[in-house]
Image 1 (tube, protein in one colour):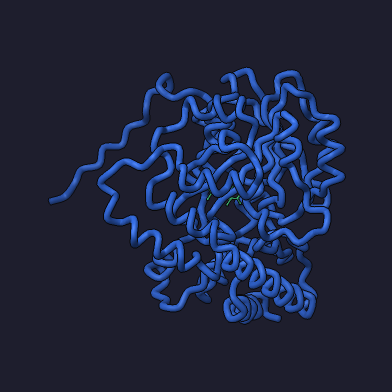
Image 2: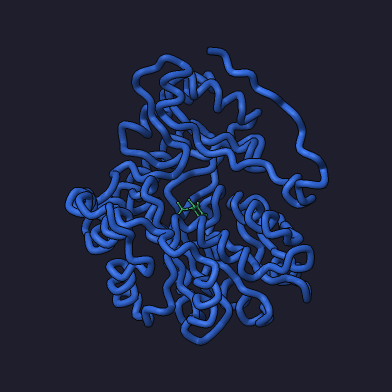
Length: 374
Ligand SMILES: *Cc1c(COP(=O)(O)O)cnc(C)c1O
């Protein structure tokens, strides 16, 4: 039977103006899709900053043992996860809120604090795409402050704040550049930023940071400042598919965030797997060590070829390919290597490449050599 698809535009009056300005988030291409499209068997995905080590085996055991319980709703407050994280961070439990990925928490922050059509947000450009999407969804006025030398310019960001600004987003390290703002830069920013602004420090790549001046935002949270720290189990913990993230903020903030939160937003399997992953500190150390060694390998290979790149505090490197990144992306794809084209990220001549295992990094460079004709 053939289906007749009727295409008819929605009436203009139906869709609010801010929604018409949105374009969907373009995610990294899934391995299966590339396999199907190009008929390739062996594909390396270095596009979404996933962990090449994968999750802790203890997380997989936890998934198997909780599987028989999934007829029941989960405990919406995620106590199995909340207690050990609060204990390790040294914060009271009410300072934490969990989300279906840290993405959901970013969404909730916008929905909770933005007054549609009136409030503003400030972020760097380029930075993580979801800040713009959630802020626009909540109908905020989005102000973007250019990076300087691929790095957040916190002075300029603080300078862009107005009486209407509600939220400042700082990805630290930044995605897609991998750059860090240091403790002293953060301290200067915090000394200056007024209290009517909530600053979101998105620390999705926190565990990978090796810089000696890695900032610690917890003292600001504990001092009652309007700071929200976001962390995730998607990157160093290797649990991207399960969707677990959390935020740390003073209880007056988490209280408001909780009011609009879906009651069972973090599913039961995710809660138990993340709790097991959190406890397996050796596995995390191993993931971080693999990344650190892989980054050195990638830097050496780039230096050898004279290809410019941005030194990274995360698990990916932004590479200047000196030509249209979409062409490089397509050509790498045909070699079975999925990366992220900077074109969609506001960096038309760059690609963003996740650090893989040694053999995956080598595979990337042999493909890149063919593509760039070195
Ligand atoms: C990957 C990433 C996230 C999203 O993490 P989830 O917890 O998987 O939703 C958030 N912020 C930044 C900067 C990221 O790169």
